[in-house]
Length: 318
Ligand code: XMP
Image (cartoon, rainbow, N blue to C red):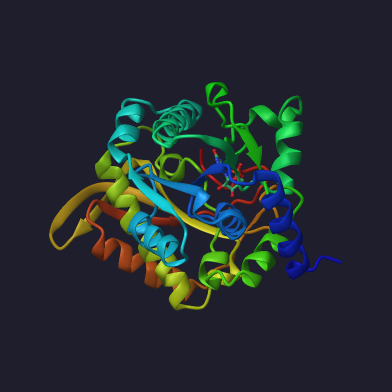
């Protein structure tokens, strides 16, 4: 059986031994895995762990600042890098899902590498890789599912960085990572966060990305996610989010005809993301959220709810 306390003691000792007085650089994503990995490394080597948290401009509303503040509050040696414009430029004109993923992956590596080069004498790259990522990246070299979507959580190390890799969570499953996080005193709200894809809102805006579309989707997403929290539904759902569709539909507002965007809401139950069922959210809740979105988010006049399960649909729409 897995005991978080014993694991923490063991892994911290192991990393101290392995890393010594070297410096480690680690990219924080705002997610559970990279956060727990950072706190463990910080426990082992203190401020010799240099964390970098990149704003790709595709995060949830206000997320960059609030998560950065949270990291600082946890005593992590973290630098927030706002690279939104760089990502937006890299995405300009791209409308195909895999092209968008590649552009984002490439921009991330460039930004991260620029930052890492500003640190001298870094020897290690810390990563929040967990056991299922290890399995997936192995199967991704040959498995038939590998080409469906190019996830870029693993293997994102550019050759020229030549750093050794340290992955304190590489033997753990997600629930074990959460238990380790709890033992370390990490905020339960952070540990209970839904998974969020690396390319962020870019794969929830179907078609090409513009700052205006990102702003609309951030507002819609915030209404939905805050609503789930307020109604005690957030923890009952494995993952939730909103999708901005590339179609306009006709509506009516007062005496005026409108011709505006459609958004889809998605909430799924899952254990590992490999299969998923859509969640039967209460009609009353959906009604309230739909009204709130249409009344408050300019540019949206229709809300639909995704009732597809995986397979054959995927969780994300791109
Ligand atoms: P799908 O859409 O493949 O999603 O059913 C399964 C899980 O993976 C997440 N996802 C991604 N995560 N980079 C990521 O880091 C990606 O490109 C990516 N695509 C999907 C998705 O949010 C879900 O949790």
